Amino acid sequence: MSEYIVRADLLGKSFPGPKRGEENIVFESVNFRLKRGEFVTCIGHSGCGKSTILNILAGLEKPTSGGVLVDGKEVDGPGLDRAVVFQNHSLLPWLSAQDNVDFAVRAKWPEWTEKHVEEHSRRYLSLASLTEGLDRKPHALSGGMRQRVGIARAFALETEVLLMDEPFGALDALTRGSIQDELIKIWSDTRKTVFMITHDVDEAILLSDRIFLMTNGPKANIAEAVVVDIPRPRNRGDIIHYPGYYDIRNHIIDFLVQRSKELSGSVRTVPVEEIKTAGKLVYPPDVNPLNGAIENGSERKLA
Ligand SMILES: Nc1ncnc2c1ncn2[C@@H]1O[C@H](COP(=O)(O)OP(=O)(O)OP(=O)(O)O)[C@@H](O)[C@H]1O
Ligand SMILES: [Mg+2]
Image (cartoon, rainbow, N blue to C red; front, side, top):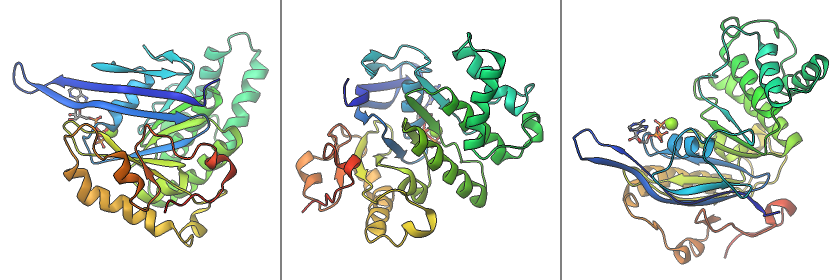
């Protein structure tokens, strides 16, 4: 079994431009590897192509060039090996919270009894801190509860890979905080591979093993993968006191403010050697850092 569950090689995507014969090249050579059980977030300016990458991983969009392997199998459409959570929950409005999860579970395991399906769903709903209001339909749930149902539904499918496109984007800061906690809990319990898009730097540091930084489009790229070497379990209150926290944070902010523009448009945006000697835990996304280091949590600062 390969250590990498997801491989994206030379991914390119273009859309027809506004004028006839014109092309909008969103990206033309995106390469990365996700390790089994890894939590990776992706940050970049609006319109750079984050959702396009996620949709290609989900099989909802076809790349113009290159391809994605999940567990060695080429992605050519949506599949039961991947679950997706979107910003706008995408629950079925005519079904209750419990039924929304049951429905997905039943589709995956049609041979299960009703009781088995319900118990399975309930386990994931309660991991997402949903024990009440399960008979309510989405319109009667708060935004936070809807996202929790969406997350419970995705994890209940027990796919190896979870794809989340700004799942907390529409929530207020307090609700967002508590759902982040639940996401950490549910991910720690299941150790699935997560690829998540966010605009929130602190959220990315709290959740991630690595953070992909994308340059601006057109011809965007994932220029760097920042390793978050803060030990787990992490919690929102303490994490900011970790000695490396602000190094990581400043590095990302600097990227977003400055380098995401400067590096835009080139294929291999930063030479490997330059990144490795930058004194930070930063690598190209297709060079997986320090094999095994994430698991044993050993110190691995670069000189
Ligand atoms: N179906 C489409 N047809 C034409 N162009 C598209 C289509 N989908 C996306 N694009 C273009 O591709 C580029 C990347 O879009 P994408 O939605 O991936 O960006 P994003 O990084 O997710 O942005 P945001 O942070 O705002 O969600 C944009 O220029 C967008 O206009
Ligand atoms: Mg998007």
